[in-house]
Length: 241
Image (cartoon, rainbow, N blue to C red):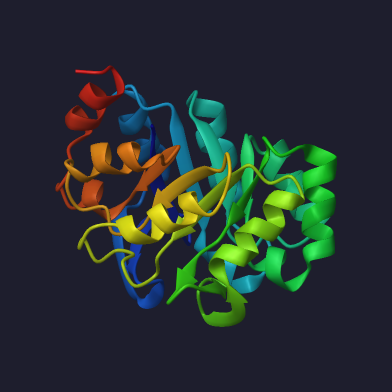
């Protein structure tokens, strides 16, 4: 299972929120590149980079941070937050993203999102299926849609989606453990999905359980920043110790 640390950006700084609430913002580092380099130095190969300003303003904002990390580390970055137009996508890929994550656009403008899958390929486009009570949430989690989570994922699988990041918003940033039951349910009702678990990871012991369920990757945020999971533990997990 791939280990994918998260860096969330507001005003160019590395922050974390709780349950997606911007009022709970906590700044962990003024320099995201420094954080990314510390991940890289522990054998981590992947990074989940979220433009929270972009998610709020519905257009890419912090692409300079993406460009800096992509040009100064070898991390394979998936980038999300406010990607709404072909121009946004072009900027993200030109700034060094290996993959992009589309969430709100997949609900609000499914035709455009499906065009992206067709144009860039399903290895480049990740579906962001973030949920509250199994309803898909959008716009930086500020809105709840009427879409049920599992049928939403299934319909995009029919359009070629392979990778799905699923965050249970109730768990995000709470350090109370991930939504094992939800991930099990998703994997039991989809075929061949590359499911990336996100939200609530609080201890190292949860990682093997997610791998056992069949998650392709897991995104870890606050547990790293709060020292609940050490980069050394992740390094050992990656090299199979």
